[in-house]
Length: 162
Image 1 (cartoon, rainbow, N blue to C red):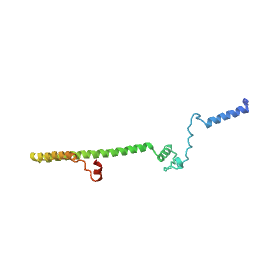
Image 2 (image 1 turned 30 degrees about the horizontal axis):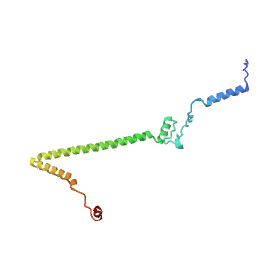
Image 3 (image 1 turned 180 degrees about the vertical axis):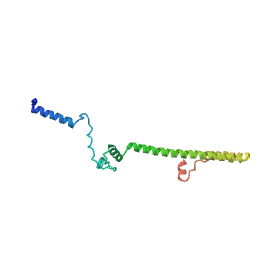
Image 4 (image 1 turned 90 degrees about the horizontal axis):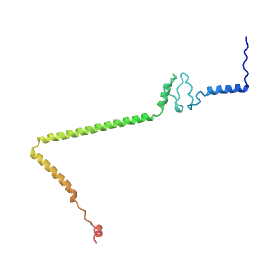
């Protein structure tokens, strides 16, 4: 067997070379600030949630998607809450729209019934109805003007006189 001579290496250089290899293994993404991923779960282990809780589904198959869904299921979702609030508002607006539509339809039916009923009345009766309405409107308009100031009584009367 031929013996091949190895080049002589200082003990210092050998130690530096080992340190360089350790740094590369310990930090493969030197520029990344993200924490290292957790080690994979052993088969049959439940996926832990935030705060030490354990996923309800078990997550025993080690499926990362199932673990992520379990994790997200335990957290409050502000976007989903906003969507739910908007859907509730939409339901309320639709109910309000239906109510307004029903009121408009009922008023139109009421007007149609009044017109149909007025067709059965004679001209003299219609003129009497119109005259009554004009008289009632004039009376309502004149009523506030007819009221004057109340007369002063007692001590108030004495103060108002010089």
